Length: 145
Image 1 (cartoon, helix red, strand yellow):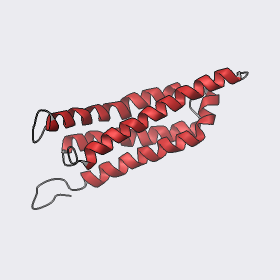
Image 2 (tube, rainbow, N blue to C red):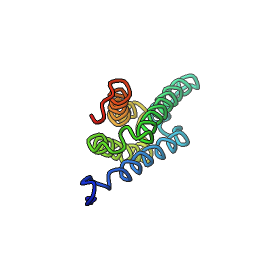
Image 3 (tube, rainbow, N blue to C red):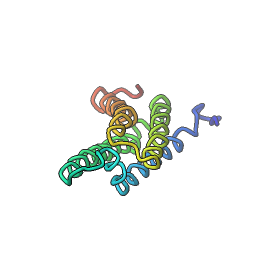
């Protein structure tokens, strides 16, 4: 969809918002159902200490993910990257991949270490580019990046 007056793709903003929300919803769902994934990461005869250690790792990863969501949503809602088509396409692609991958993570009961790979590619990368855009706009005073 193209807007006649602006010449920009108008579907990127809602698409980006929806993929961000989809990723956020599945992360919150993992918080509720992490027991299955934690048990999948442990040997059949695990101790409560092993369980607590693995659960703490999972909660830490999920908490950091929520913090990165705050960074991305702050940049998005502040308008810094809302109309940046490059950032929008990058964010849409990675958050869509995250939502699909994490759905398999939940339904298939994957081991917890897999979450760190999804986290690195689908949460850290878009948040990093968001931070770069915020620095470019507010510190370097660039209008567009």
